[in-house]
Length: 297
Ligand SMILES: Nc1nc2c(ncn2[C@@H]2O[C@H](COP(=O)(O)OP(=O)(O)OP(=O)(O)O)[C@@H](O)[C@H]2O)c(=O)[nH]1
Ligand SMILES: [Mg+2]
Image (cartoon, rainbow, N blue to C red):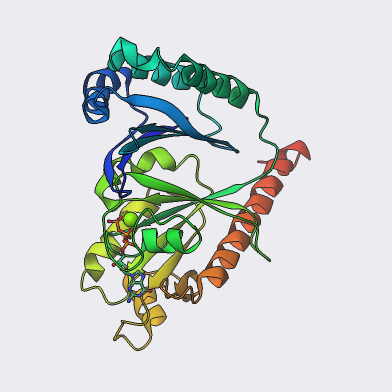
């Protein structure tokens, strides 16, 4: 799924609005109308552009709001360009013209990004689970950014994309931290994900709800996964792995106790998940080879 995600933050890093793969009509009529309003006609210059495997573009408006556009490496160039054009259309014409240089710079970035060859393999892991289960806290553990405060809860609007650098047994990873608020859009991230982590708050009374969500996900996300039994510091259940294994009807080896606050268990969980992704890749490549050897059914 080619992806273009656009987010707006205020200067306190609160997300004001988010959209993913905006269809042109809603992009121009609603989202960008709002954008024009909050930027008050002062969307001025490109403040940052990071070209990695994904492209991230940020604009600022009077340093009070900034707008982030995140495009994965599969995002068609046309889609990015369309976004740019709509952006300039939606804002009054004299906004981008005075900063033609910045606009040109943004277009150049689009041009160069489309030419960027993505050579380094990178695994993508989606973080799923009920609200407050700890997905964002987990993602922030690996990130220097603090878009969500560590010890407070604020629901994730749409998603955060976090990169984890290669670390001992863990290769470079990309995390899709998907907010429960936007569950209806989760399916869009299935195709770009190699695996998922399902988060359970070990002290949560909503275990049935969590199990139902897990089953719902499993019926569509046929990917390697592990269950993160998070907040083990607050759980009163003596053996949370055994408990969840029975409750969710999954093998106990799929369940990892973690404490995202301190990072306890998070690397072991990731290492196991990576092994599963690699094992699956080997299995798939073996299955792929059988017909070539004439041994297929
Ligand atoms: N005691 C304890 N609390 C934790 C731990 N990890 C996270 N929390 C807290 O639990 C809450 C989890 O919040 P988030 O990580 O934002 O939850 P989320 O799963 O991203 O929720 P949505 O974005 O709404 O889907 C926060 O208040 C965290 O401070 C942990 O290991 N122990
Ligand atoms: Mg969150």
